[in-house]
Amino acid sequence: MAHLHLVDRSKTCLSSVLGHATTLEIKHGRGCYLIDYADQAYLDFGAGIAVNSTGHCHPEVVAAIHTQSQTLLHGCAGVIYYDQNILLAEELGRITNGELSSVFFTQSGTEAIEAALKCAMYVRNAQQIVSFNGGFHGRTLGSLSVTTSNPNYVDRYPMAIPHRIVLEYPYFFRNNPPLHTESGYSDYLKNALSAVDANQTAAVIIEPFLGEGGYVPAPASVLQILRDWCNATGVFLIFDEIQSGIGRTGQWFYYQHYAITPDILTTAKGIASGLPLGACLSTPSIMAAWKTGSHGGTYGGNPLTCAAACATLRILQDQLPTVTTLGEHAYARLQAAFANHPYVGDIRAKGLMIGIEWVTETGAPNAEIVKRIRDRCLQNQLLILSCGRHGHVIRLMPPLIITKDELDEGLTRFIDACHHVLS
Ligand SMILES: Cc1ncc(COP(=O)(O)O)c(C=O)c1O
Image (cartoon, rainbow, N blue to C red; front, side, top):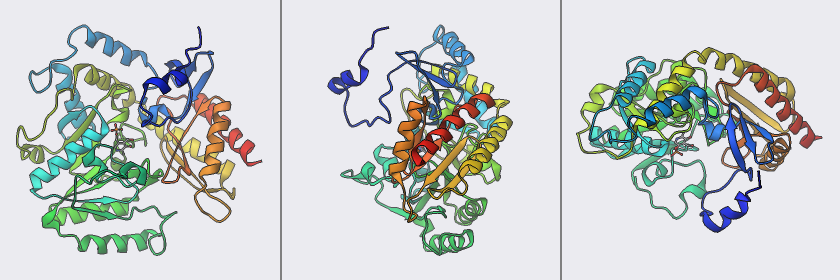
């Protein structure tokens, strides 16, 4: 097939505001691979930023979309009732153990955050939000107000939520003493929370496994401190699991590893295998206090996206233990390859959410090396992405249906690329 010059053409017709991580021109996707116009197959360890949980074009997802497309494309969940919408809400309640069984659907992650914040503000009748440094919650003005992962995202934009408190994240590897240990951090957090005026505060929002900010899991003790403070004050605890949810860490949601349940949960990305869907989940009593009509939307919970999501959850249901095993295997291989390497500062992983932090000789964030490794990986036909404030962390987030052979193949290409760059 003729080369389509997509990169060149994009320059004349697409806004340059959207950055591009690669210049790959892709014809189609299949399983864990993206195939370009020269028929080169790239192993996809980025999964469209943790979206292609079931890989590319999983036959069961495609079949579900196809079947749904023949009966109802849209009707608006705010106008009519239809099966897929209710089915998916019921399923989400089930996978959150019946605790977060009331669902508001959106089309994206950022809108799920808007819903979570608005729900908390409305029900608590308070406007202040406590968030965490390095958090990424989205790019619409509300979610941007609690996003601190990169100063570029907020430059020249007003803070739609003026009453904000930003606390340090439990990023022990980068935090300054005494916040670099669990006990030092815990003291800091308890102290900081005790100074917060709970009556003015709607919610505490945190990514329990920091994504864009550097792939950093929060320990159970920290989540428990937040839970306890919220229990004591009535402030809502929001877990943003838009990146870490839907099986990515080996449980449906990261918080389930520790059974520390939020009041409000946001999900999106991997939920519908690539169709645009997000959701804000909460308890029936909190949702019932959110006055009907005080929030809404035209497309949220659209039939096609819900059908894709129901199929996605069905496929992933039996895959969660495998995600854990594959993640442990990947972690062990990466540790063996890099544990004592002077440029590898830290390796953090839970399931198939894996971050490798790169440092310079002085321990500073090393974005330069990450860029070179990413380029080399592309030459090895492996697509990987970075994260972290400085772009100094490599994140590996392959589709969750990846086989052990495919995972090993990708890791071999990755380790080979690293050795090439480091040699
Ligand atoms: C944790 C988290 N929250 C929110 C978002 C925003 O989601 P979206 O890009 O679908 O608006 C993202 C996207 O990367 C995310 O990782």
